[in-house]
Image (cartoon, rainbow, N blue to C red):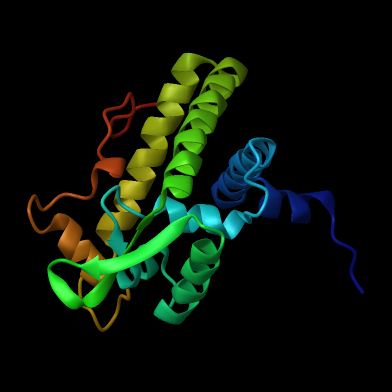
Amino acid sequence: MTKLTDSDIDWRQDNFGRLLLNAFKFTEEGILEELYNANFTDLRIVHLGVFRQIDDDGTRLTEIAERIGITKQAMMYLVNECEDMGYLERKSDPTDGRAKIVRFTPKGKKLMKRAKQIIADQEEALEKLIGKNNAKITKAALRKIGEQHFLSQPSNSETSRSSGLRSKLTKSSGRPPKIFQGGGAIKDGAKG
């Protein structure tokens, strides 16, 4: 059996995808740890992804599943868990009596308020670590990457599970969602 060399391993560890994944894990684990410290001890990392996709006035379960890119059945399992823990509830959709809207309970709203503060604290700490200008440039670059990914998705519903969401999000303006539209220091061809 051939032993892997350092250069064989380096390319797998030192690339944008891996570095972004490591940064994502670092921030998610930090959020979860701080939520534990605030007595939200029943959560798992996977629940953070669910909460992140729910609009302030609630969101249909199928739309949450589309946003994350998992099946409706898998999302139902996660929403059931969050409902059992008291963070989410389902109410009838006022625009369609057959559909249900998933929304935050008072406990869920308290969690989200705390999560918002934790994220602000994390961003402040990261700015201190890499510098305010580098943080601004990094955020702008990540928005640009996200925008490119969003715009490169097929619009044919047969080839893309998220195409329904893509068309809903771009229907009014023809642009990607605001999360990818932030102003930033990165311009085409700019060096960072």
